[in-house]
Length: 267
Ligand SMILES: Nc1ncnc2c1ncn2[C@@H]1O[C@H](COP(=O)(O)OP(=O)(O)OP(=O)(O)O)[C@@H](O)[C@H]1O
Ligand SMILES: [Mg+2]
Image (cartoon, rainbow, N blue to C red; front, top):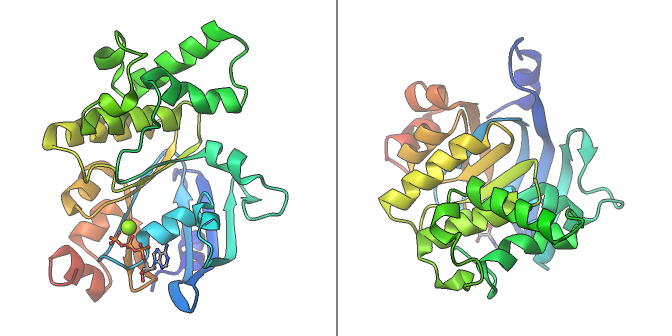
């Protein structure tokens, strides 16, 4: 099993800073023990892929990182998760503020039933990031550019976000997520509803985003994990089985379960 403590002592000079530290995390849905004793350190300015068979706990663990599990009544999270050394489950942490700092993009594009402009402006507005309309306009433009969708929507910012194609909606949702200047971006199978062209655009975008953010992406596509990530975590039955450089996971995995999964024997 992956041992975070051993990894820490072996940390070499020149490695990236650690953004998120999870220690002994357990997640229960009622009596279902969905995440078992997971400890991991997620690097800054890096794309980390979570892979593993359906039901192994990828989404559950991802949701721990911005307390989205708080919204699920029967869900209980134990252990410690810190971002930049600060416990995100501390009573003093406001989950709404936390989610502005740790943005999330879901499997199904979910624009608000509002204009393209308002979809992106909403977060910056509630978090008071703009002093006036022209600052807000700038934030919206910058976010849409980062979402690689500005050119396609700049002439129809007042049109409804739901009127865009699926791939455009997903890029709008990415723009919405980056508009609040998050430090971490969580993406749960962000390309599963997209065609290969839109997938390519989102992957390019992920590659750019890692210059500023820590990006964590859940994916069922090994090709995608190999293309976009530098680190990969393999989950199986609620355990974090192996966590290492993506290249190592895909060429020389240490655990037989990882090998079976990446060669298509389980999953
Ligand atoms: N909202 C929920 N309520 C109750 N149980 C849940 C909930 N979400 C997940 N679970 C359970 O937790 C376990 C892990 O599920 P999770 O959705 O995290 O897996 P996953 O790896 O993301 O799977 P997939 O690849 O199919 O998305 C499963 O046993 C699942 O049934
Ligand atoms: Mg999932």
